[in-house]
Structures are given as C-alpha cells and as structure tokens.
Image 1 (cartoon, rainbow, N blue to C red):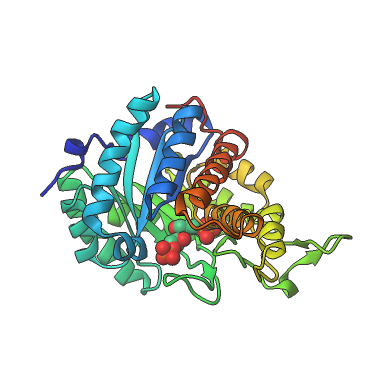
Image 2 (cartoon, helix red, strand yellow):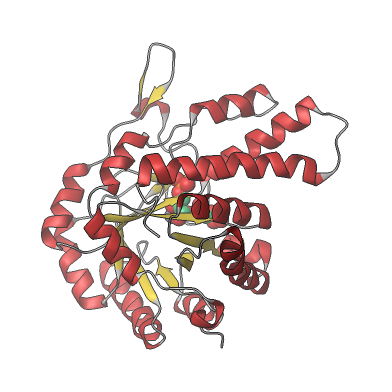
Length: 330
Ligand code: G3H
Ligand code: 13P
Ligand code: ZN
C-alpha cells in the first residue's frame, strides 16, 4: 500500500471548501502520457492554480498504473522545480467497481469517483457507500454521481442523458457520505455533445447547442447548500481547433461542446470541479496534424509532440484564467 501523502499529493476536501467560498472551480484534467502531464503542471504552476489530475480506467490500461503513479509523484517535484508547489490531487475518473476504487486507493490515489449512475438508485447508494467507507479510512475523498450523461465517444457514457433529479440529492449525500456529487444538467462526454438536430445554427453555419439546465443546478444547490458539485463533459470543443484538424486531413463532423460563458457561470456557483478531457485531445491532435502537414519529412516524435504540448499548455492556462477562475488560488 502506498498512501498518497507519501507521494506529496492532497485529497480534494480543502480545495473544494476554498473553491466553494471563492466562487471558482478546480480544473480536473485527464492525463494518459508525459506530454499531457507536463502541459497540465506547466499551466497550473504558471497560473498558480490547484489541479486535479484525472486517470480514467482507459488511461490506467493505456499507460500502466505504476507508471501513472510515479508520473503523479514526479509532478509534485516538477511543480516545485518550476517554482511553485501547487496542490495536486490524483483522482480516479469514472471508477465503476469497488475493487477498482480500492486498488487505486492502495496505489496512491488521493481521490476516487465511483460512478454508480448506471445502476438503480438503491444499488448506486449501496456501491457508493461501500467505496466511501473504505476511502475515508484512508482519508481519500469520494465523488459520486446522480443522473446519466449522454455521450458517444467513451466507455462510460450512455446514448441518452437523464438529468439529475434534485429530489434525490439530499438523501443520496446523506446515505452515502460522499464528498462531492457529479450531476447531469445537459453536458455530455466527447466532441459531439449534441446531435445537429438538437442545435440551432449561426449565420456562418456554426452549431449552437441548447443551454445547460441551470434550473436543475439551482434546485440542487437549494437542497444541499454548500455541497461541492462536479460537472463532467465540460469541454467547449473550440471551433478553431476543429477547423485546424479538418484542414489538415481530419474528419470531425458536427463537433459541438459547451459554450465557455456557461461554464464560467457554473464555476461561480456550487460547481467546484470541472472535467475537461476532449478539448485537450483536440488541442494535441490539431498541433500534431498541422506540424506533420507543414513538415512532411519530420519523423522525430519530439518535433510534433513539443508543439502539441505547447498548444495544450496554452489551452489549460486559458481555461484556468478565463473559464474556471482558479488562477492564483493555489
Ligand atoms: O469521461 C471520460 C474521459 O474523457 C476519459 O475518457 O475513458 O477514453 O479515457 P477515456
Ligand atoms: P469532456 O469529454 O467534455 O472533456 O469530459 C471529460 C470528462 O467528463 C471526464 O470525466
Ligand atoms: Zn466524465
């Protein structure tokens, strides 16, 4: 067993308390490799933002759990080397079983999500409660989920969304003892968050998605005042990145995300954690495609991964400063 404190990591409890009081959200960026991690830490140190490093079960399979653990440990030293020791949380994204959450806790994660949202309400409560009991023995924080996000690009999502029922949140939080709650108010995973027929089109043909259900968020806040809320599926799918990808051989059709001004509004509310993965994937892919189009003879991975890392770092800094409001909060 490695306890996360031995790795220099923190859990999310105090970060969420501060975010709630300060009206901002902590960035939760997914990572699978070295370049993503370098970009995340670089951006967070430069902007002095706390950060949640997220590892999905797909990331764990892709990168290997031991390597990820040591990368996160290394990130703590890397931040100091860059000049500022920001608080770093290592979080399991969309854990789906007790065993997976337990294994991550034993491996040095400081926070886990147990996503029981696909189960019946009763089974979600029972599973979440079991994870909380084990996690809290180790001072690890737990995120639960109520409501189902739609999404078509990953293993953890459903074709259709089911909004969170505000009348369930109080009972869920009380029965399970979770530290934060992910809710469904119209966000979804991936780069095609809405079907074109759910959107309107601007004069220049850009898809405009339906607004998030802030009425549900407000109702949730009324029922569990001061309780940290999490938004998944919060990439904004920048049209400039989609255009670069498509101009350089990509074929992303009808990509659409959540407008940043709505995420800014959410960050000022009880939303304390905002999950962003797809925008990072788009930034990296855009830079790699463009670099290879402009330099077809290039075959040194560092020559296309370095610009990808720069683009990623710029994207993360932008999110921290202009969307989440977590700059200078570390
Ligand atoms: O919510 C899902 C995250 O974007 C992780 O995606 O399962 O493809 O690693 P993944
Ligand atoms: P996006 O696909 O919108 O980036 O959402 C990521 C996420 O919710 C990770 O859990
Ligand atoms: Zn998610």
